[in-house]
Image (cartoon, rainbow, N blue to C red; front, side):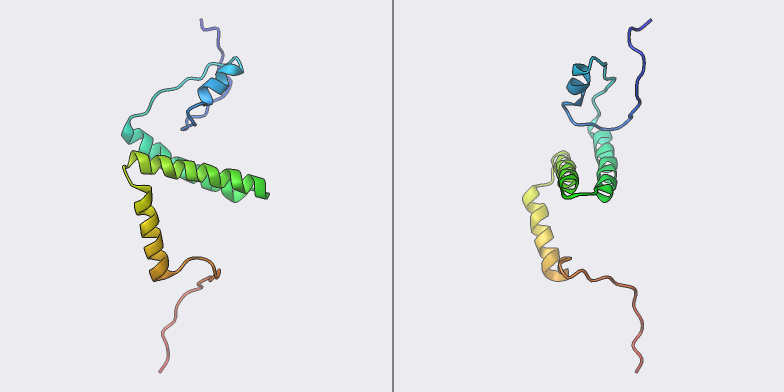
Length: 116
């Protein structure tokens, strides 16, 4: 019989130092190292998780933390997919040049045909 009893179930991708942090609390972290394919899937899920946490953020400090978490996942995805950060920035700038940014806060309700 194991000397450990299950405390919590997470079933999600966590940061690299989380198992050490758990061990410091005298708990055993049940983990596995994901394959590249599994990691990409889990990073995509993590974007959704972190986006939801960003939406729920109530103050500036929480917003900054959640934006940092989103950036960390973005960087991990780019690294795993072998996408250059400069390329992403170049495409962002091109799209901004052609389509604009979100600075004006324009909310589109829909479109209608013009009457002649």
